[in-house]
Image 1 (cartoon, rainbow, N blue to C red):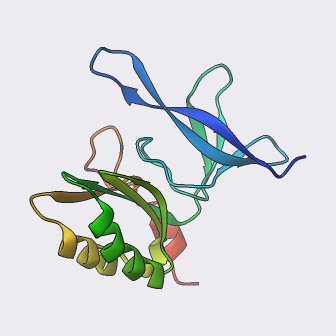
Image 2 (cartoon, helix red, strand yellow):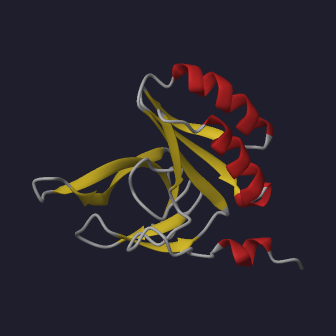
Length: 159
């Protein structure tokens, strides 16, 4: 089995014209043909870097097999994100976070849930403004965008 990265396409939603939108993501293909995400997605809901999924045959849908414990954080900018990335990245990196995707108007970070929601939210709310907003990519149920998935309770439970 090759350890080289491969790229898969996952369903990310429906476009304004009703056509499916897909996101291309780098993965490590594991021995059982499941895939481990190498970066948190910008658009696919419910996943973060390190999660293990299985592609559903003949489609761009997936089954989540194992969570990594990472949070996907998406930061949207009305203007250029270069100043924001210079401000935010060093602080998140000190907590073990990583910048996965940088575009002129969007940043996607991965950080482990053990850093604590409060600390992460305090940092992100500190940069939020009329021109900058942020969301989690894998904390709320994609069906309603509000119901917490609570997958982190298993990870954060004291032994």
